[in-house]
Length: 322
Image (cartoon, rainbow, N blue to C red):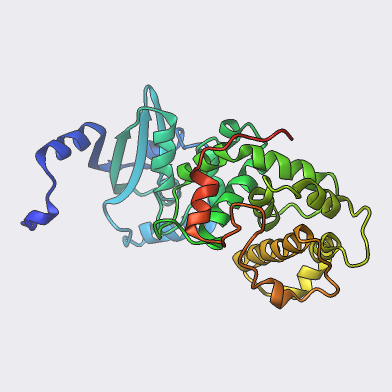
């Protein structure tokens, strides 16, 4: 088949790709499948027995698609199977040899292996947790795995769900990790503040902590929310604490994860603005609070916009004395 000229790549680019990437059709036996699975990538998702059974049945009926791809990354003397574990397990279960397309990609470091892994399996989308673990996020950020994943999710929440992306696209996991590295001092502050009390440690609350960490009233606000001490009757910190400690479960019933996180953030922003202005909240109106579009005394003082997001994520910061 002759492809249009616009579909063809230049000779130099083709040669460069061929040096790193190869794809060949191989007759893979059950014995060979077992050998390949010995180098299964450590961050692979859990094996889904139902999917394996389905593929094995298709193989036994002769309906499995010939040329289905598996992908192996090569790093020095090591091999990593980053896609194809379900296919290979099904092949072993069916006991039938199959013609598979075996892609081999030569990688220069573990980050390239993680990149390949993150972009594989489009029909079974990688969870964020699986992808971040592939990049060894815990080691990069110097945090526990749970803290690292929450921190990265909060950064992604601010990037995607609060303001929309700067270029109308989803940030890659490695971009989120780079952003998290820059904002780590902000995360350390909110972690200390919320863990002093019993405040739910969630994406929306963490996002608000990241956004307010440089504000003048940060310590007073978060210490009050976290510990519940020294409240007056209509104190905004009390209103936010009450919302976090149970009111939000009723107010946000049947809402999606994103809407729930956004509500936790925006209600908190509403309370923070009231506290910064020295005003009381006599009665919490959640619907009104959800319309909050600014965060006083922060880089979001002009609104939750890509411009303010850029100030938060990309302008070089020096961590203040905590």
